[in-house]
Image 1 (cartoon, rainbow, N blue to C red):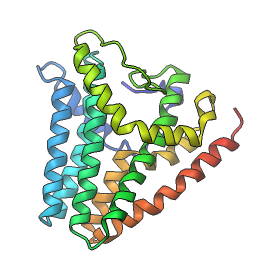
Image 2 (image 1 turned 90 degrees about the horizontal axis):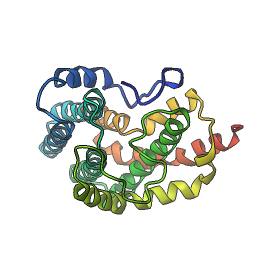
Image 3 (image 1 turned 180 degrees about the vertical axis):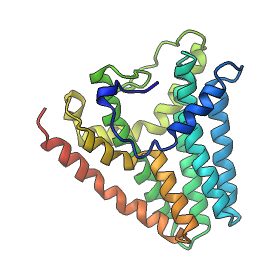
Amino acid sequence: MSKLPNEHKFTDLSDYGRPLARIIANSLKETQFSPIHVTIWFVISGLIAIACILTGNYYLAAFFLILKSILDAADGELARIKKTPSYTGRYLDSVSDIILNLLIITSIWCITDIHFAFALLAFLGIQLQGTLYNYYYVILRTHVGGDNTSQVFENKVPRALEGENQRNVNILFKIYKYLYGMFDKIIYALDREAATSSNFPKWLMTSLSTFGLGFQLLIISIFLVAGLKDLIIPFFIAYTLLIPVFIGIRKLLPD
């Protein structure tokens, strides 16, 4: 199942793992494994990748980073296949992502001579990139009647869906807001008008998908394997400069 109706689908360069994610999800359809279990698996995969980075096993690190990206898509696929969407899973997924992102960038900083301030800038840049992509993507899904687990504005605790605990939703929502709130506010301040726009052409979304987490992990993997670990942090700092470019292009499009 897709997050978008067929006529609105675009080529998502960050979603290269979706075919394998669907295979994994379908293989788990009739089992007791839940989307939460798959989320835990991608956290474990991410932690293994970090350990591999720190120990210089860059090929293995790349493998587990890509596996993490595939499993990150598989938990949502399994939720849609089993028809068990949940805010618990949605927020746990996002909270796990941002913590792993920080740990991944920190591990790369540990194996380079780059000042930690630049590592922090790279982390902030990665999060702003992903926030802009998700902001436009959620707006698009909202306008065309796609998946609605994520909302354009996450301002209040949602009511727990069938099968999940409201207390868990409350706790994870607060953590989510604490970790992502600053990034959401920055992106919204840069492009408030996007929330009421309905024009997000496929070419723009495909270009913007290079800001997606899957593509970011792919870039890190390629740089590690190519022996370019010292360029990872500078790359993401520089790539963040494209944020105003994409916003400017979006603003020039007619509604």
